[in-house]
Image: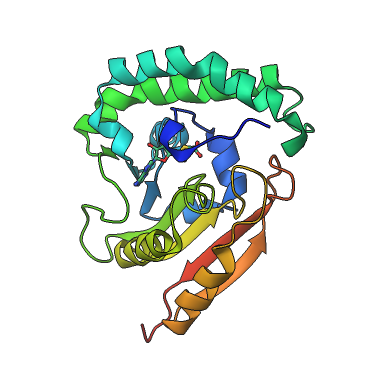
Length: 231
Ligand SMILES: C[S@@+](CC[C@H](N)C(=O)[O-])C[C@H]1O[C@@H](n2cnc3c(N)ncnc32)[C@H](O)[C@@H]1O
């Protein structure tokens, strides 16, 4: 099996509908002040804007211009898709029927992102920033969501990075949801349990919850961390 390494991370964005299901976002949640950490070229922010809502996305990718991101997507799209096709056994092909259908879904999401990016940058909705240090004041957001970054790259980002990143996300938001709890190799992240213990020891309420999103095999779980009144 070819492995996918953190340093090779290429622009690859999920859709609004996937975000809703990965994070079990309710209508009430969508009205909250949300930060999407490591959002990359996902379309969540763009679709939320179209629906009259507001999200701030934060990712180191946003130091690039829209043209640079578009060129990078075009240059890497086929190899990313080929990599997924070579690792088909790691995924459930029910809702997304094939690697080709996956490619269409991802490309549509990334095009939605690109068509919103320049305006969103001007409006402060796409902010360049890198965990574990985010450019926001304490408690700026009600909810932080982080899709396919923490836990996914457990081979490359050590436990102390995960602790710092989770601390930082809980500094800027009252609640944090992370999805998935698997690595890119489709194995459970060795850091999920230590992070649960760590945040509980700091007085946070922590739960692992099933979500109505399935794609990586065994990957339908989200971590929810909520600030309790006394921390
Ligand atoms: C696999 S993509 C996930 C994109 C999006 N969240 C989604 O699920 O479609 C991982 C993202 O993590 C971003 N990233 C890499 N290092 C980061 C860091 N230190 N802090 C925040 N984001 C980072 C990358 O730029 C990339 O956009």
